[in-house]
Length: 175
Image (cartoon, rainbow, N blue to C red; front, side, top):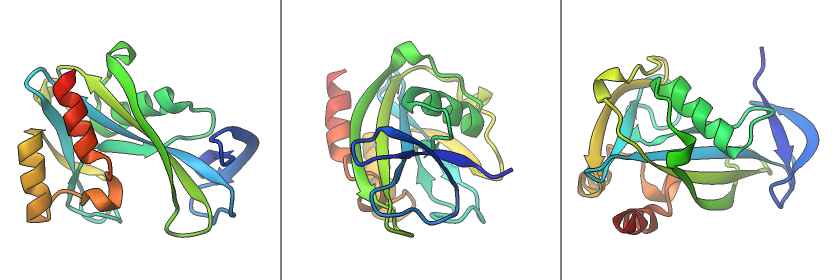
């Protein structure tokens, strides 16, 4: 069954139409994508490694995220994606919507409305059950480790997916 997305207008509002994933979007049409940063009490982030053969950024480390499906709002997409990809139930009360912005889709004339979430939550890494067709490893990493991984070319480059990363790391120092 095809994955369907709610089509958004330029203000991020659902327009009452659905879009099938994989088909081109028109100018002025967008869809919601969430990125989820889970930080523990040691100020480490739960990151995961993309499986080979997934597509974009094969074998690279990243934070959890994905497309909202029809009917999702930002928070429900966040909770669902984290559960699907990592088998982790995050507590909505531990989360904060950190940033919202839009960027053009690479493959067509549409746009992506990105919502970036931060959760303060302890997660037993041994309890993580990732989807092997998407994720092949997980680890806790602090901001210095992530910056080193970026420099080594094994973490998705911020300019490609996380243009806010310095702002996020600064913000996380205050919470």
